[in-house]
Image: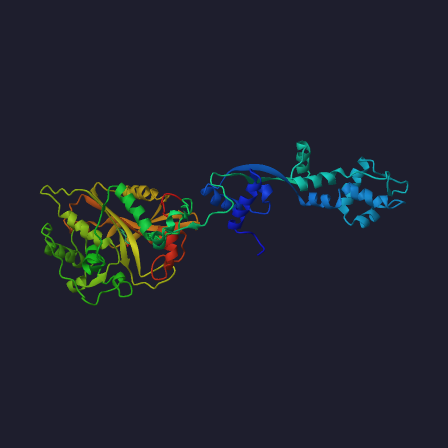
Length: 513
Ligand code: PHE
């Protein structure tokens, strides 16, 4: 059939041409074949040592459209001369333009024809020819270039390029030689050694197709980390670098006690409403808090009473909320609404390390895990998301220190110029929302919530008065959406996530834009 020959045909063609004359220049021997095709055929023959070849780069002169036009119809000046030669009485500019049909050809052509002294002007202002015949050198040059793709006079070529009649083009071509295993045909090649070949003994004379080690392999559909996991890994790295220990967050269900009461979220607080919090129906309640391991030496009954006292009557300098606190309410099971439930539990355990001298070792804890809120789902809210949370317990902690720490922590992710806004959390005082200017959105966006835990929360756990604890939290989804340019959270988490998106998302570096 007509059309471009397959590389098989071309390979045979190359072998046959090479038999007649070696070496061969591919651009001359196979002018119609494309570079890729020739290269493929040569690789095929080369891997079998049937040919050897080297690559030659050279520049060819190619006619621009105007050059093509001159090669076909003559130079502008020659066309002006031709038109005038057949008009015995000469022609006005208008007539000349009509005859040639191109104003710009007349404009440029008549000027040059004057210079060549091929034409002159009559007394009544007409143009007329002054010689019988001319030689159109420019046309001849164009034709030579069209045929040979070069011109012996390099200076002239440069000139023609400046006049935009010709351009130079890089041509890659191959000089092909016969190889040690040259033959007129590619021998038939077996790709597999079969049982049949062994049985008949035909393997002894068979030619086997060589392995192509240069072939790019088939696409591998390997496993891929979800973008949230990649950003999580970056955050963990930052925490570990800063001396933090990871908190065990491997439970989604908490009692109201740890999720709310120890954080002094009053039992009537709207956050505890059914509209905001998912309650567990089976079982409905937790056991009263108690030690779960032999190392846990805390007296949970004392803690329970302390928490109750702070809510109901006030203690540790707090006047309390002054309402009848319900133990049953406190034991209701919820899907944790924040990881601060875990932080509180960890701080309670830390307080147990208090020595006889009252000393508690400083600590830095973090966690990154899932939390649940009974929210109406939209483009930026889901009923579940991930929280990144950190706490630092030490003596001599100040609010200024918290701000400085935030600057360093977020700075490690490339988030700088933080702004702080006073906020309210039942468990921290003072509390601050953290904002950062988002260049893409052109405005300040909230990136976290923070504060210093209230003394009545810490003292009820057994912390001495001079020990302070910072805490802060942020969502994992927000920075992930920013880094991956996602505007709808449902594309990131939940059943609508496109697996191809997970497969093709690159690794993320928080400190790189
Ligand atoms: N629990 C807070 C939230 O969900 C974050 C926070 C943690 C704030 C610790 C202060 C201290 O937004």
